[in-house]
Image 1 (cartoon, protein in one colour):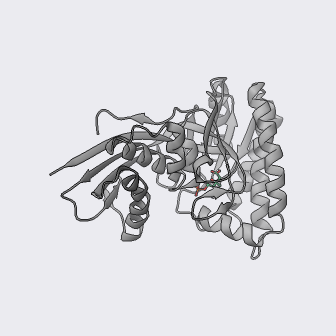
Image 2: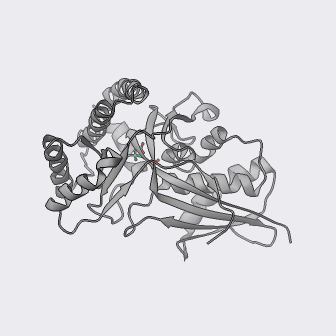
Length: 329
Ligand code: PMV
């Protein structure tokens, strides 16, 4: 029996300038570049074992075997690495999502970046740099491109598969924090994949989104360079709402917002009015993530907890890039 094994940790990331639509759906090349913050509190550990003994690929998440449909997605992803290494062994993938709450906040960003890094290690593809690895992670899920690195990360849309990749922008070690409001942790109703494809095809706002996103990205990079927290927050908040506006203008229209999402938006506005700089961003789901000063996370939580009694909050500082795991479990 011949066996190759690798194990890696990757953290999730939250986009401050969103990725919302593919120019090439097969290769996961986006219509716009995007920019995110990697988060310390949420991550995925993944071990992959390629073995001459296995007859089929298999995948267990948090100790539970996943469906044939999910395994098929993983197989397609692993094929990229098998082709590169010229190995045809089947693989066993084991992943643990470390999300300090009920399911629902787990993200494909950490999942595919951890699997990409573990596969590179297992198959000894040492010539693949971290930056190039991000182009592999991208093929599992667009947002995974950015989880290869820590801090603020840009996903440059590029022009082809080889240059649609992550670039590290800044460590984000200047008093940046995030308080996640878990509005609803159930499965999302419209997947990001379906939601962005439908929006791109039917929303008259979509071309304007593409145009504006470029401006937002350039401005947020200036804000990061200047370590201007207020400007960073203002741009991120506006960009999130622009993305959600495209979905509302789609045909048929849809939204990821729930009543509590709107309530949370108003609470963040009240928080700001009370003198604490805090800005919200929202992905393809109802949860609201509040960007604030790390040194003020407790105050932010206390203010919001006052209005949302039973809500679970997750406080996090910026997280690191992919890390090799020397021990499993
Ligand atoms: O790559 P996905 O399927 O995780 O899509 C990500 C879409 C958003 O979270 C809404 C935006 C983003 O850039 O992460």
